Image (cartoon, rainbow, N blue to C red; front, side, top):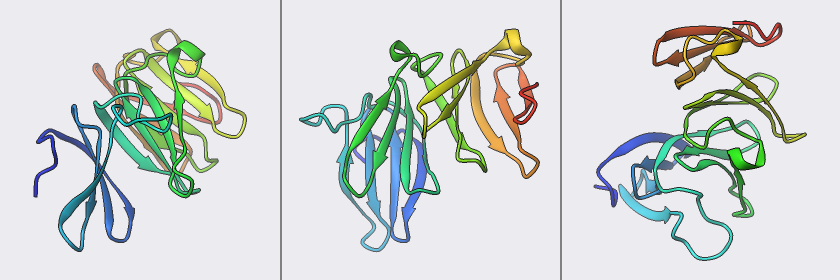
Length: 173
């Protein structure tokens, strides 16, 4: 079964039988594992306020509270699966260093980390406050393609110029 775009960039298991498939150009396709069919699509073209900010999806993750976080070429969307509400976080409102978000991770304290084309953003969903880190803070490159959180509260960042380690508690690279 093919999504409406063959360029699948990210996949996130939302529930036991549902995958969300992020595409380049066609938003998010919801895939039913049992029927093996795409059953729903979320795009920036949807009518109303609850729509994606951009159809070019780079990453999708589900946090421990059940929210879905989507990184795209237009910023970040936070999706509440219960209510269907979609919140948007963008550079122009101070939340991000860049609207090009390549990677998202959540740490053990439920802090969100966004890897962008212009650096790393720490985002606290409870306060909606952001802190930004760039090469001037010691990051090997401002382009962060991937993020992993380890058991020692370190972030491992895959950048265009190699691997960077960020110690969350000391805020040092």
